[in-house]
Image (cartoon, rainbow, N blue to C red; front, side):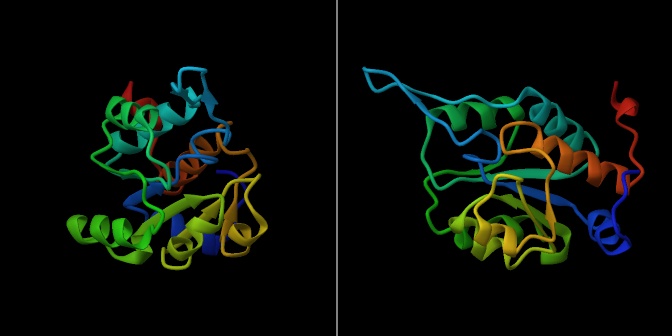
Length: 174
């Protein structure tokens, strides 16, 4: 287990739902737009493997993004994400909907964000997390700031911490 304080370790153990912002968390915050208007994003494969492992361990994973994006829709489908809210400039509504549908309490939810739109949800969840290259306001509300930047393994870092705290061995899923 990595060196984390006992309060964080206890919060990690309670997590049953991991909600992720997309741009700046699952991506490096960049968007490629071609001359014909086609959009492309780069997602981290290690983060995807982490999501797979979390799901295998019984942890629900959801996306709430402020942007509508076909690339994000495709990535959510590819990863088997059942709760993916896109074009959600107000993230509290989708947050409450997911929480209600899954019958999960705030303290059982971790949220990873990086900017101002994430703050309302960061203020509610049991484990608010900001990626290393987050806006300073988002970091102010985080109980944990990742060592990795968004789009560069930050999500995998968080999932590894959750699994370690629950004493889940990812090799059991091979």
